[in-house]
Amino acid sequence: MREITYTEAVREALSEAMREDESVFILGEDIGIYGGAFGVTRGMLEEFGPKRIRHTPISESAIAGAAVGAAITGMRPVFELQFSDFITIALDQIVNQAAKIHYMYGGNVSIPLVMRTPGGSGTGAAAQHSQSLENWTAHIPGLIVIQPSTAYDAKGLLHSAIANNNPVMFYEHKLCYRTKGDVPEGKYFIPIGVADIKRPGKDISVIATSYMVHKALEAAEILALEGIDIEVVDPRTLVPLDKKTIVDSVKKTGRALVVTEAVKRSGFSSELAAVISEEESFDYLDHPIVRLAGAETPIPYEPTLEKLAVPQVDDIVTACRKIMAAK
Image (cartoon, rainbow, N blue to C red):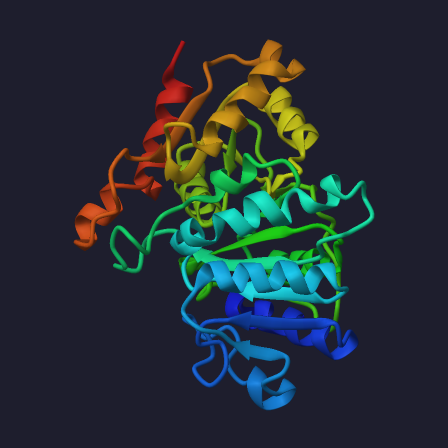
């Protein structure tokens, strides 16, 4: 199997879906000649033309609104927000329209749209371009929320998202774009709502999302040298959430560490911890659930401070050591 970048995997999924189905099109800022803020749609204008690669004005509310309207009429739009922070401008269209129209029309109208957007810190983009706001959309009934961590997952889940008849929020971490992985050629689907065990282990279940999966895997290699065997669980989709895989992992290890980049207060780490507490896995716990998440501060621009604002590999290693050392 060939190895390609996360960026290439997303581009392949988009291109394959558009070649197969003429109702699929892309709209967003600078997605044409420029190829998108992170180069994901580079070269697609030449193949599909300006009618299907729709370069839009700088108005996130207009982009999201146009996508909702197109979806109502039978198209399958994929709209790109340059940074996930800009969802603040499009929330009315996403939360009050896309998420609710199917229900308010008694199931007679579907909204098969996908929002693609880069999220997270690590690129020096500062406070207004580095947030992790996925929990905002995860809170809204009617929206599917996906956070793929690998190139393989990104391609398979994006195909599933485009084929789904519901609005899907597809978050791509900026640091994931440059990662590489084995990705099959051609179209394939990864079921929405199915978690993945990225690394099996027996001592601690580390439930990590998005780019934190890569940090957890790096921490696992360090801890393995000390005889600590951690299992890395990647939910992949926040909504719907695969509770069974998480619960089964915690029942096996008896210990749980939740790692997310978003601010800890009211973040998705709370939801993951609650699932473990409320399900039968709670009775198997040998140690209280531990959460690592973002600090309650805007993301700093200065690189050292930026790293301090979100969990790092050393933080995961230290937390696991403390969990294992506890009586």
